[in-house]
Structures are given as structure tokens and as C-alpha cells.
Image 1 (cartoon, rainbow, N blue to C red):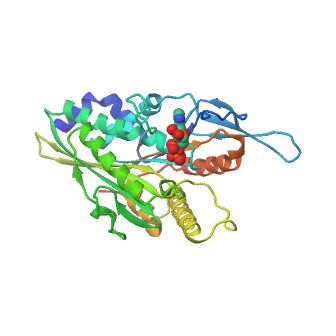
Image 2 (tube, rainbow, N blue to C red; image 1 turned 180 degrees about the vertical axis):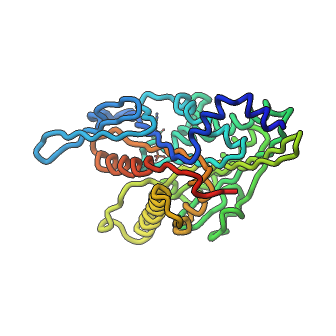
Image 3 (cartoon, helix red, strand yellow; image 1 turned 180 degrees about the horizontal axis):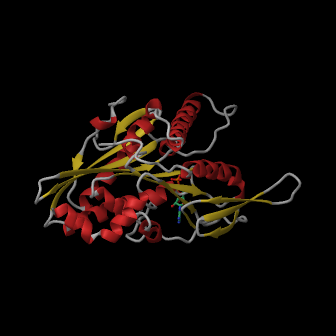
Length: 347
Ligand code: ADP
């Protein structure tokens, strides 16, 4: 069938993709110093998948801690370099796999930069979202003779355990279930650019100058792909979640009250629910507690089993962030131990 022909043609790529199945890959990315900053970096060294962090100690003597991941991108890594290692995963969505890519790290560590890009974006600085969709369209076009693909996107935000649809102008549907969010068909990168703009604007609606809500909500771009094999009529369905998580920084409960405390508790709850799901997958538990947060419900089909998951963990290089950096890297190391068999069938 056409499907097998495509697989033959992509044998090498496909093998690469098979390797990724069921594992959670973790890439670490270190943000460069921003203009005007320049204290000594906490990053002692980077050697392929290893990163060594310099930690201050009470006696004034420096400590060193090394963490290992599938890959570590240093501060000079370009958006293109970061994307190249992500590409095989994105392509597998067209073969009917579910994929989840998420960005984790404290506020200001570069999550949005990796997933979307900087404020004044150029083609060179476009993030994973744009590149991923660009690739999907390109590959779908190449397979035109054997497959017909339908691509549609959803954009949602999870804030205080409430789901908000970012692709419609009237944003009053709190408590929405994820599958009910608007699903918009896209046919080109231009369509996607326009939708992302709508989503960004809607996201900003909830934010005030003092309260940059975007750092305290999870945002997710979900891409649904349906391919029909023209020879056999077989339908392949794949889906990809691109998630920019809320800032992972711990909040001192004695210093915040009201809304701010509520936000912090919700973030804590959802990120620890994510950690619990991952830990229970790692232990191959029969019961995986997906239902404990909106975030893990959303990602249920893309964590475990046949799904392919990639986490970008972001760290800031500044020495005053060293506490958060260590706790981020510890969380990430826990995530990277997950290796799954076909524990769950997702279809
Ligand atoms: P977060 O989403 O984690 O809160 P941002 O992505 O907004 O962090 O990054 C904070 C600032 O650092 C932004 O001004 C962003 O453009 C800049 N930045 C982050 N990562 C990089 C990078 N790899 N190269 C250049 N600038 C970066």
C-alpha cells in the first residue's frame, strides 16, 4: 500500500522515529545572558548530554553537580539547531503517532523563546511551533500522491485549572473540556501565523501590567492530523501537543496571598500531577493518575504507550537562579528515566 511505500522511502527516518517510541526524551537548553546582565554563569561545563552546575556552598567553597540528558543545548545554540533534533518526532505525527513536546522551566528561562520565538521574530528566530507546522505542510505535500492529509489546530490555555479556548474571540467558556475547544482547519503556514496571532491576543486579554498571566498559565497548541491512504483507504490519525508550561518557580507561601497564592497552588498542583504521571509511567504502574489535573488530562494520549514525548527543560545562567536551576534539573532527571513498553494502547 501507499503507506508501506512511504515507510520504505523513509526507512532511515522511520527507524530513528521507532527509537523514540515510548521514551520520554529530555533536552536541556541554557538561555544566554540577556543584554545588561553578566554575572558569572552557574554553568560550569556542557559536554554533549551532560551539564555541570556550579553551586555555592556555605563554607564559600564551590560545589559541582552534573546532570545527564539526551542532549544539552548551550547558550549559543540557534533555533535551527534545536529544531533539527526535534524534526523526526514531528514527522512521525504524519505516520499516525501522538507526540507531545513541552517546555519546562522557571519564568524567564526561555520556554516561550523555544516554543514560539522572541517578540520581534524573524524567520531565523522562529520557534518550534512554526517550524513544526511548516514541516508538516511540506511533508504532506511531498506525500500528495499517496496520502491526503487534513490538518487542524486548537489553541487553549489552562489557568487556575480552567481551560480557555484561545481561538475564539468570546472567551467566557470557563470549565470547558479540552476536546470542545475550537478546531480550525489549516492549509498553509500563513493560516497558522494568523491563528497564532489571534491566540496570542486572546491570551493577553487576561493579563494586566502587574500580573503577567502568561507565566502562570499553561498554553497548548494541539495539531490534529488525519491522513487517508489513497490506495487502501486506511485512515491514520496523529496528534501533536506543543505545550508552553507555566513557570516552575517555587513561590514562598508566606509572601503571597489572594489571587497570587491561588495561582501558585494551581501551578504546583498541575506540575506535580505531571511529575506523578511520569513517575507512575516509569514504574509501569497499572493505574496512571491522569485525571488529577487538567494538564495531565490534556496530555493523556501523548504520554506513555505508543506516544513520543520530548521535554525541553530550560535554565537561566544567572547565579542568583541557582536554586531554581537545581530543582528544575532534578525534576527533569526524574522525567528522563521513563522508558516504556507498550503499557497503554492509545488507539
Ligand atoms: P519564559 O517563557 O520561560 O518565561 P522567555 O522565552 O520569555 O522565557 O525568555 C525570557 C527572555 O529571554 C525573552 O526576552 C527572550 O527573548 C530571551 N531569550 C530566551 N531564550 C533565548 C535564547 N536562546 N536566545 C536569545 N534570547 C533568549
